[in-house]
Image 1: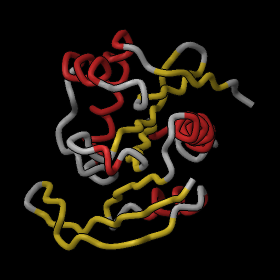
Image 2 (image 1 turned 60 degrees about the vertical axis):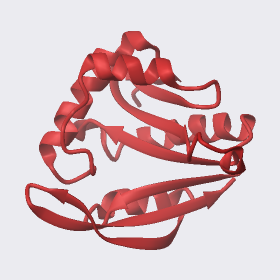
Image 3 (image 1 turned 30 degrees about the horizontal axis):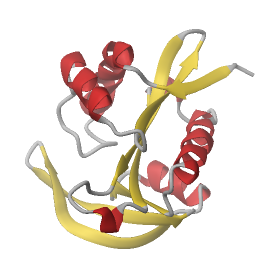
Length: 165
């Protein structure tokens, strides 16, 4: 089995993360993000995260093959400090190999250690693979936003799922 190294991303990882966004956004299926973030945007984003938030990367032989983000639900009030959002992004050739679960174990441990009690994900309705992945982590569906995503002129619903830690 391939050795996977999970660690917190730094601004120096922005180029590799941006390259993953390019691949995933080009697929037009797995994310509501329709344009990849530039390395500069990624650097700014990573640098902007609080101590309670993070991007965690999965490396195989020194190459970043995926990442998972954890953010506070909102920053404008502390009444939501117990809620975070999660996103998981893997290069196509590394999907289905357990990397997402390894990332999730790391991120969930981090979330618990930093006071999160609940995590929320939003998934395009047609992304059945992601829905199954999050169900396997004990997320449960809790709602649908109709016509929430519009990419290439096509609308798609978005599924919300939640997990209590």
